[in-house]
Structure formats: C-alpha cells, structure tokens
Image (cartoon, rainbow, N blue to C red; front, side):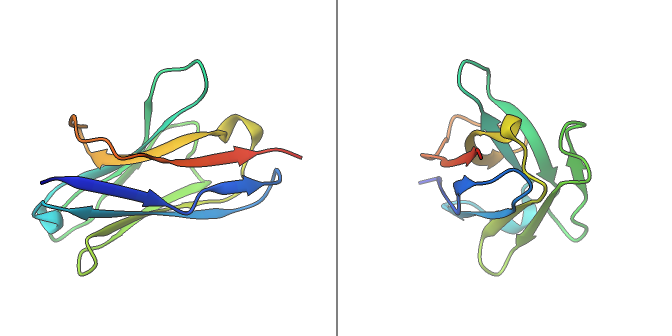
Length: 116
C-alpha cells in the first residue's frame, strides 16, 4: 500500500537549517510528482514545494519559501528531501510529503519548530 514516512524535523533557532526526508513505498516513485506540505497550528495545510517526476525534476515553490527551501529527490532511494534554510518562526508547522497534487495518503508528518 502507499506509505509516506517523514523525518528530520526538530527544534531550531531562527536562521537555522534542517533537512527533511520522506521515504515513499507502494508507488512507482520515479514517475510521480511529489510535494512537501505543511500545516501550522490553526491553519490549513499548504503546499510549499513540489518536484516533477520523470527524467527532468522541475521544482516549484510557494512564494513564502522561495530562496530558502530546496526540494530534491533520489529515485534510487524512493526518497524526497526538503532542505530548509534561514528558518523563521512562521515556518513552525508539521511538514508532510505526498503526491502533487495531494492524495488521501498522509503520513504522520515531522514537526518543525522555530523558536529562540
């Protein structure tokens, strides 16, 4: 069955960095577009970055994270990554990966907390 397992979150100071990982299983990973989503307390889940499948991995970003977030994928490992730099308190959220557009297959997410 389809499964996404996110990891790499934590508590960081403003300006810090994290690298999130998402291991996917039960899918033909290399050909599907993947996305990173986040949900902050009291807010709706939002797409922050996506990357296309196939030969050319095109990336797209939400305006709020452009220049700070980088999405990448390793098709040999069925894993998608999110490098987050210059973290800000407003980046505090639970981060999830899923297809892009999303499906009903949500993992447990990984908590990112940015606080001094």
